[in-house]
Length: 213
Ligand code: AMP
Image 1 (spheres, rainbow, N blue to C red):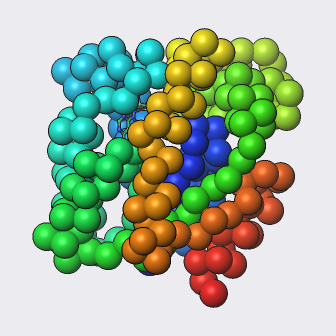
Image 2 (tube, rainbow, N blue to C red):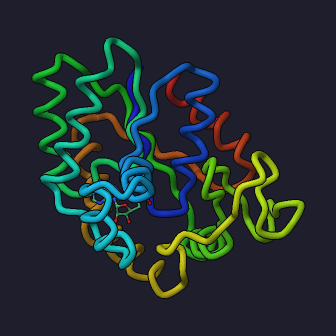
């Protein structure tokens, strides 16, 4: 089963992908993570992406599509979860074409619905470990020692694009460019609308039930 996790920034796509990868043995393809890793390694791709990411803007379609193509080609039969891609209609069309070429099929598009106030509080409080990527929240999941990762002892920071002024732009970009894809996938009869509020485990149960029904 191949899935696409869809939703605004802060909807829980990354968290739910982690659950799915662990419990259903799927490959996680997160374009945001791929860009962050390229930035950490200071590659040419990372330097290019940083100019857009730090401002909450979208990285140009051709860069993202090329990167996803490479990942899909390297799957060798494993099921996948797309997280954070597609984010524009040209990306969605390119994905359909790619899946066709590679003889792959998307089974479901899981759309996580979360109210704006919850998104903003999740994003402003989110902290991540620079070394291992573990995710924390200042209120709901603080680190035991401030600024230090419980898992690996790495430095825990706020992502540049989780600053309040950038979050507003990211939500705006989502509404304008990405939310219209809900209709795109509805028209393909692939959309599953899931309530993304509440405990992460409860959201996971809702997803599992919906995709296996
Ligand atoms: P995320 O971790 O999915 O919230 O992505 C973080 C940032 O990476 C976004 O705000 C964009 O700047 C960039 N990004 C990730 N995925 C895409 C995409 N599919 N298209 C364009 N930019 C993207």
